[in-house]
Image 1 (spheres, rainbow, N blue to C red):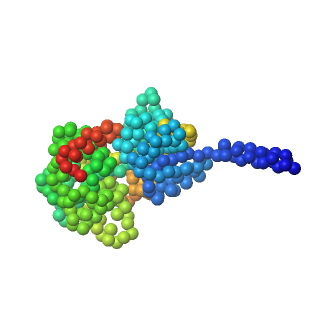
Image 2: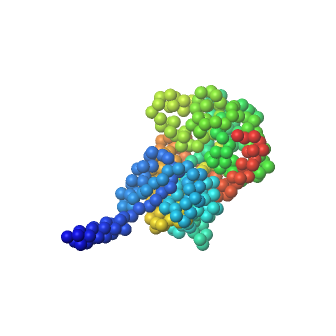
Image 3: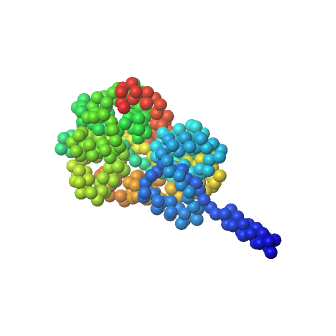
Length: 347
C-alpha cells in the first residue's frame, strides 16, 4: 500500500511538473505606476497565454535591484519612464540586446537606442511632451512659445517648476544643452533660476495648480499631467484649465522636447523570447491606443492616430513638431547638466 501511495505521488508530481514546465510567464520590473496599465497587462495574457509577474519600483530602484541581483535576477522585461535611466541601464550593461525587425520598423530611430550588429538595447513605446502652461489673463502666448524665453527677464518672478534634478527636468535640460551648447545652456539655466516665483517643490501637477492659484504665472509640465486635469471630474480642475493656456515650445525651431516610457530585456532574462513578445505587444495598435487613451501619452509607433480629446485639444488638433535628436544623446548629458545645476544654484 505504501509503495502504491509513493508511486501515485510520483505520478502526481510528475504531472504537476509537466504542467508547471508548460506554463508560460514573463517577469516584469516596472516603473509605470498607472492603474490604467492593468488592462494592458491582462490583455497581453489573454492574447498570448503568457502570465505576467510584476514588481513595481521607481526607475532608480529597478536599476539598483538589477545590479544587486546580478545573474540571479529573475527579471525578464524592464519598463522605465525616463530615457536617461534607460541609457544608464544600457551603459551599465543591464540589458540584453534585442533583435526584432517588427520593433525596429515600428519605432523611430531617435526613440530607441541606436541599433547595431549587437541589436537594440531599448525601445520607447510612449512619449510625453514637456510643455509650458501659462495664465492667459496675465501672460502673452508669444512670451512663452520657446524654452529660451523661460530665462528672459520679461518673465522674472513668474515661473513654477519642480526640482531641477528630477529626471524629467534633467532630460529637458540635456536637450537644451544639445541644442545650445554647454556655455549657452548654463547661462539659460541661470536665467531660469532668476525667473522663479518660488523655490522648486512638488510634482508637475503642483506647478500647474500653482499657476491656477496665482502663486505663479508660468509652469513647466509633462503633458499627461495636464491631460489628467483636463479630463478630471472635479469642476474646479476643469474651470482652472479653462483659464490656462498650453504651449508646445519651439515649433518654429527645433521642436518640443519629448521623453519616453520605454522597455528593455533584462541581461539575465531566463525567458527572453517571451520578453520580446511582450515588447512587440506594446508596439501593437491596441497597446499603443491604450497608452493614449489610458494614460494620456502619445504613441511612438508610426501611423497610430490619437483619439484622446485632451491631447488633441492641447495640440490644437494637429500633430506638434517634436525634436528629433536621439534621446540617448540627451541622456548622455545628464552628469554635465547636474554640474551646471549645482553651479547656478538650481535646487
